[in-house]
Image (cartoon, rainbow, N blue to C red; front, side, top):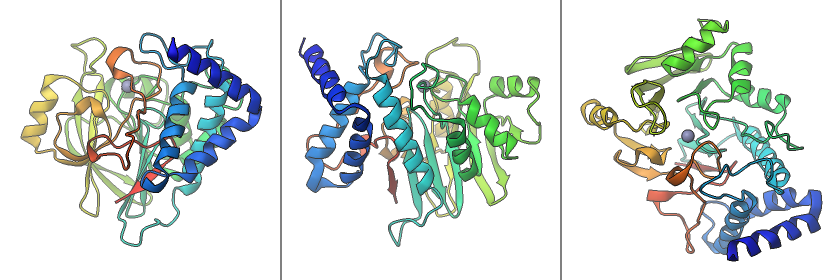
Length: 324
Ligand SMILES: [Zn+2]
C-alpha cells in the first residue's frame, strides 16, 4: 500500500515536470557522486527515485510495457549512457588513478586501464524494445563502439548481450569475445571469424589496435537456465597496473568455485554479485533495475543512509565511474 502511494505520487511528480524530469534527475545524480558524503542525502534521494521509476516488483518484469514511467527511465538511461561515452578516453580525474570503472544498465561495465578501454556485457537496455520514446539510438550505440577496444559478453541473456553493440563492434573491425553457444550462433549468422573469439577455459589475451587485454575465462553455467549446458563465461582481467577484476556473468555452477581456487583467481574488484563467494576487496552492485531475472536476482539500489557505500556493496548509478 505504501509503495503504491509512493508510486502514485511519483507518477504525479513526473507528470508535473514532464519531459524535463530525466534531465533534472541526471543533473541531480551528477551533483552527488559516489564519494560525495557531504551530499549523501541527495544521493539517497536520487537512488530512491530511480528505484520508484523502475516500478521494480520482484515477481514481474520491471519494465513491462504497462510501466507508465518507462519513458522517463528510458530518457534518463540515454542521458547517462551519453555521459559515460563522453567520459571514455578522457584523462582520469585523479593524478594517481590507474583504473576507471564505469557502470551502466544491469551488468554493464566498462574498464579503462593503460590506454585500453573494454566493455563487459554493455547493453542499451530493454527500453527501445518496449518502444519507449527517447531510448538509445543506433548512432549512440556506435558512439559507444567507437570508444571500446573490445567487447566481452558473458552470455546471451538480453540484460548481458546487446546484438546492436556486438554488430557495431564487428562492423568497426573490433573483437567480440563471447560464450561458446553465443559464438556458434554468431559465426552461423556470418560474423567474421577473425573478430569473434570463443575462448575455452584458460588464460589468454585479445590483441586490439591499442594493445593487449589480458584475461582468463571460465566456461560455466547460469544460475537460471538449463543446468547441463555450458552457456555462460566468467572473465578475470589482469590490468597492466596490477589490479585484477572479475566479471562473473551469471555463472553459478559449483565448478566455478573449484576453478577459482585452483586457478587462484583473486579479484581486487568484483563486478557481479552472483559470484559473491569470490575473494575480493570491492564488490559492486549489478543486476539492479533489470528485467530478465526474477526473484532474488533482482536488486534495488537501496543506498546506505550514511555514505560512502561499503566496499562489500558499492553502488554506482548508471553512467557513474570510480577510479582506483
Ligand atoms: Zn543476468
